[in-house]
Image 1 (cartoon, rainbow, N blue to C red):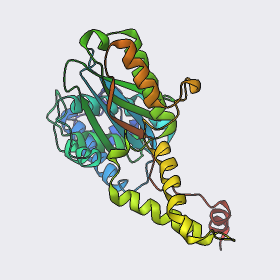
Image 2 (image 1 turned 180 degrees about the horizontal axis):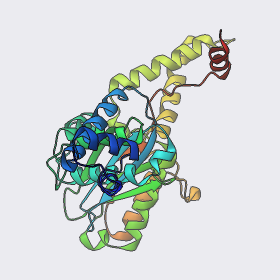
Image 3 (image 1 turned 180 degrees about the vertical axis):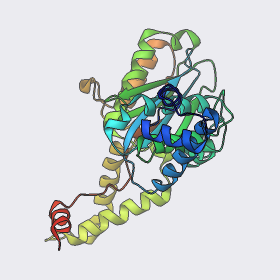
Length: 320
């Protein structure tokens, strides 16, 4: 067997970023063949990655990218287990690969379905699939990494503008598509400022839809059921004959909370709702300004986080 020199171990470490002991073991197994040793390390990394697949990942990054002319933008969420790993170059480099791959891919049927499909595709400039690269990263960092979701917004015409807003260094991000009354208005500072403010509104106030017409009848009916149940539970219920009017009032208020156009704007409250500001900016730009759609990703939202029970952990450690 060829001698496993310090220089050989160092070269393998530089090429794989694996630990010194792992590099030496791989070289011994590969009988000094560095290319075979690289393959061994990669395979072991994949196995480690598969073993950690079940661990809950709620940290990570939400990142956006927008074409220079504002014609197309995308948003991705990639999760890991700790903020420490999320801030590392390896994880951030992987997120860049996800973004680069998504740039060349059509809008998914749904953000989560799109993530699953993306994992099967080859990374630009490599024969490896995104999932192979992901598993190697998991093996290296020791943390589960998940490409959770991604989405794309594309301008439907020359008057459309797609913009992105990222908050808290990647903990929350928004993509928004809006339309100006003309190309000249679309390129104006006033229109861009309005759209940017609306994106920040979406981030801060979490609307569900742009306008109330987008809320399904089934969802409205369910909300009415909730309000009726609340009325029944009141200590001194109001006469049932008055309930329909009360419920309609509650639903109307609910619409102002869940629809973007119905919300009071947060950057200039004295100007009223987003719809009022939209109409005002439209008059100054010579026509109607339209807000078409948005995508809002909050890091880890909806993922059930494991709560640590310190007392239970101490009891487990001291048992026996």
